Image (tube, rainbow, N blue to C red):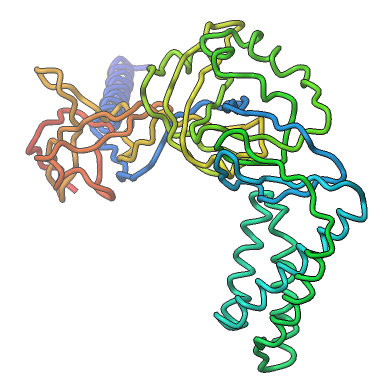
Length: 393
């Protein structure tokens, strides 16, 4: 091979290598200079802690129940001290007679209501009342509501029907005859004022002073064995304020402050959200704590319950989801992002609400609200970024 041919081939090889290197450097630079953006999306994220626990109330168990005792008040009804809450009868015949009297009383009341408001309105009212009675376990209301519903159905089929004063008078005479025939029982009265319920479970003796600042095992032991009461009539809840002893993760419980108000979303036995006050945070044990919350709402709705399952809500932040790569700090350590406005980059200062799965949920500073909003283009990556830089499309 001639020397000139070898030299030509060597120069060609060097040239090819140089071209390849140039292209490689160009591609790397192009990749590093490429502007990567993401569209701003508004999200809501919250942190919470799951709980299970027990309701504690100031409760007084009432004795004197039995098969021949008829309740004179409804579950969830507030009663005054000395008010008749039940009647004890001497035998089955007297109790049966009392049942007939109660049926006549309800029938007369239903006819008077029907005459006053009309069947259409009564039907709507009855449906709503039935839903409430079933939801809150007010079984004492069901018989009256059943009679109202039947009356509304029959009247709808019969067309126009108005109960007359004569019908009411006839039933009133029957009622008077039964009442005059004797069979009246012994009145049982409320020893204190409070809210009455026939539901008892044997844990009425667990008071709040036995719960505060206790370990989970100590609280759990209080609900292992129910106390036995002979034929309880029911119980009185003496205060509208009640407590929820919640078993929580110790790390979550450590975030709570005594006296603070927390929103708790309840599920299963009772569905609803309540704002409750933190009364105490107990001693940690095996990664768990008992936190005692208090509340003065929804007493009637939870009256028949002892156990509750809930979710303590720590935060509920709504803002724009921003990748951590898009967040920068200025010389004063103030966070900001670059926003692509048309073909120009603008700087928008932010306030970080919370950290969420590799990103931040942020809101714009008041002065930058026009830049940072839902749907704008946030610069995630790019080289040589600065405010006012023009991006060639």
